[in-house]
Image (cartoon, rainbow, N blue to C red; front, side, top):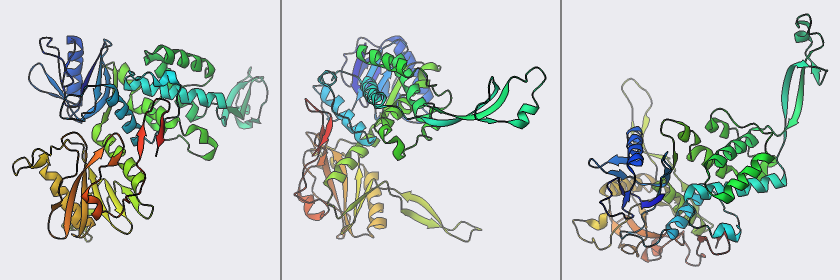
Length: 451
């Protein structure tokens, strides 16, 4: 059983309530499990918060949750103030944003895979991982030399450790203490792939994915999975030219081993947790679109922190310290310097009065003012980028901090992956009008990037 909701939806076990995308009805067992998660996660992030006695409120996280009873909750992006009519477009949007954020380029898939638009997010990740792994196995895994020390060898192989051999007790003179290099597939990358494969074999509920995972498991039978921390092991993954063929599968393996959190199912909470902060996914999607639309003479810098809010010399210290680093999402440099921030929030152009102020957050404006003073020295143009929807389809009129510093609020088309055109273009020379429109979608016959 699976329910679909969107960000900030309420979850309850009260069957008397009418279910919708903003109110999910779950079983008592699942609700109790969610209450335990809420207590565990309350100190780290606002994934779940209690709202009354019988309700839990989701935060700005999207993805997939599966309780130990098998009941599933799919959390989709909230892209409109109205309730969305269809689930499939939201799933496709989430996949595009996830792919852009993690640097994943989906390859062309078979028609059978393309028709499975009803796959939840974790099954889609599993199917893509298996497809890449099958291709890698078909081309051939990379081997490496590994040093083996054997103190019970029946014959001399490689180098004899004379000192250790002389210390052998009586009666074991026919056993040799040797040291040799073995050419085997037991390198860290293959072991991580085997670990991810074992987990997908246990967790997938799609028949085709299970059969493919089972077949690959037999082909990789001799490779030993990782027993310790997979996060530490992922840092040892080599990106050299020798492993060029492994680059496509690495982000899929990383998603499974780090984001799906395989240890979660074996712990006290047992289940599947695959959640992503929507703000980060949106920033990655916007950054992808901006980079493709930018004039070649300009450079897009993401998450820079070259400026701070203030400098301070503490008592007893001789040198000043930089406090409160300012980190805008995007800074464009070249013939013009521009500061841009992406905000995952639905503005409302109908709220054009001094009370509601288009629902723009006042702290966001303070933040942009500080960016303007430090990065632009109080002179220039900045931009806040919000998702486009039916009540925010065109850029708002320009906002001015003073005669030298201005701010534009511009919609970002989630489907096409580009800024909505408008008067703001006269102030931003870094985006040429003749630049081709960037589209990253899932057409009927291909999973690919298009321009």
